[in-house]
Image (cartoon, rainbow, N blue to C red; front, side, top):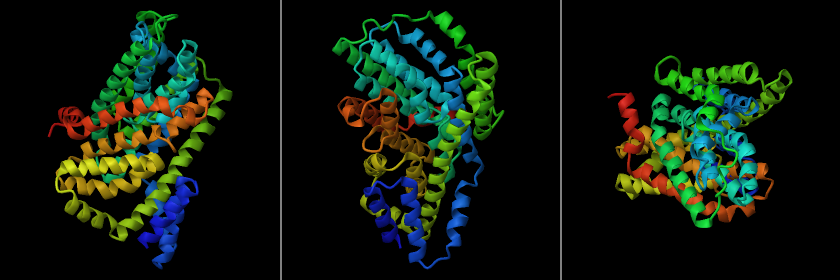
Length: 425
């Protein structure tokens, strides 16, 4: 059964069939091969999405779309530009900093790419940066959308591996700040070397004026994250609060969302949510079948025999996840792999929260690596260029994030220090 399922899935991937359909078809054939009742498919697919924390996904997607339409993202750009935009290479640094702030509410890298990229990619091109560099930078910076909490992949890992989502969220700040800092340092040095961005400060607002204009936008992550860690509401409830706040600010304060805009925003959010939920349902059925067949246990025993130490185990997992992330969508990869790998990691004495951050950061790399990097497609859509044109500019950014991944992997304190302070053991 297992060989039929994996063979079918790989064949479907090779034929460029969508990830959700590939996984679902492989699972259905697995049920047929094992002579099990087909009602199992309906039951397990429903069970996969019948989990309260997953309700946060459509709400965070909707909040991100409302922020884009309501002018919140534009004001965040002006605020970030007022901080770092006055130095050479300040505009690329603004892109990274804005994505980091926007990520503190959106939870989605694709939403971050569209919301921030629609403003900053044209601005970067106008200031003389190559369009390929602008698109690569935006795609990479938007990866922070799934590392800085709240994060949809963290929610999925928490549900799949039965780990506290609140602990995952607080642990995400360390890796997120590390990646953001490394990217900002890299683009500053790169612009110095290339001689780009000497006029990036043109049209920049003063810090006071930009802060005043973006005040309501900046208050949003404070309310959301403060509410979660202050014990006022759960991460799932926070997603609904984010929607309400974005709607009130966009319609009543900034007055950039009209009644007729709501249909377009809701429609886009429903489509995005449905795609993710369909992947989750099919991946849940697939994970149930391979678990029933004893695959996780067999993989665990094999890994323990081959990879004798936690260091080798983490190196092997990172190599495998990096390759898997190139071809499989992040949400599907987490749902399928987390129940398999998390117990093995715990056997090696690796904290499940730390391992979750390793998985999320690694698979987030898949969003900026060809051939199926969703951030790349989004950035190329905004920049109106083909994917093959940005690969050369993308390599240095991938290397920077890979370096950060190695630090996150082998220095657990990056992820766990803040978690241990907030959730005192």
